Amino acid sequence: MLKQAYADSVWLPLTGSDVASNWNSLWDFLLWLSVFFFVLVVGAMIYLAIKYRKGRPGKTGYITGNHTLEIIWTVIPTVLLMVIFVWGYVVYNQMTRPPSDAMEVKVIGKQWSWTFQYEDGRTSPELYVPVNKPVKLVMSSEDVLHSFFIPNFRVKMDVVPGMYTSVWFEPTVVGKHQVFCTEYCGTAHSEMLTQVNVLDEQQYAAWKRGKDVGPIARAGGELVSEASAAEKPAALALSGLAAQGEKLMQAKGCVACHTTDGTTKIGPSYKGVFGSKREFIDGTSAVADEQYIRESIENPSAKVLKGFQPLMPTFKGQINEQEMNALIAYIKAQK
Ligand code: CUA
Image (cartoon, rainbow, N blue to C red):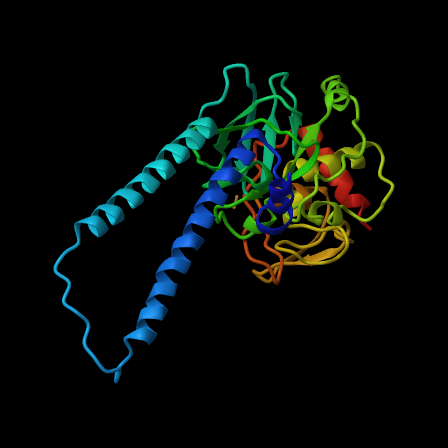
């Protein structure tokens, strides 16, 4: 278990899936093989440079050929490269061929959030999967190129508009695992974060029944960030419509650009917006009411606030009337 321990702490993120441990072994082999040849070649170079330095008396003999040497430096690298090829192929094959009984989850990337859609029709802004069961993700994008990366599972794949790509994994460690977008996709690319929640049998059974599984601990490892927890809106006791709105803000990815504590990210904070006078880049102004908030969601470039860029994508047709009311109620509650 020594290798596991160091892989988790020094070189690599946590080993959280089946594929990850095979990936680690291949990585270790490549790393140490490279280190060995680096030391051999650079060591010989330094030794010879000193041994045959300028001004040293005598002359090196003229070498015309050495069959033994030539065979050695042909056969050894050939064998090593074949080992790397076959080993790499085996791991690659494992990574790209999901077992036929894998559970399928759809992933939708969008500037700048992820949505997961399950067989039973539910959706969630974070991914929920059972431990020790194969999961296949079928991914697409609503707008631009994104890339779905779970470092702990060693899986990464582009998410492309107009086509389906997929990855699969079998998680082996219960807890939250960080997900990154690793393809630059616009202003809030670095905020396009989410979590894979790997649940034990009991938690997963509860989740399947639509019950709250309670807080999920982070799976160890340095790459798991606290960002999503830290950005949660200040502890306002929200209920009813506003609480629904809060969930929607997470699900639709609004929180990537907007805060509720008055700090400015890519877009303005929601704090104190409702009922305030808003000044726009074209010199006009308006008081923020329901109509203004709705317009800002559906047609964000119509009234761009002074000091901001027209960066927000339109949400027209993606938010129904009930959801719109919940969002407005939530913004209204940010006094
Ligand atoms: Cu999505 Cu970067």
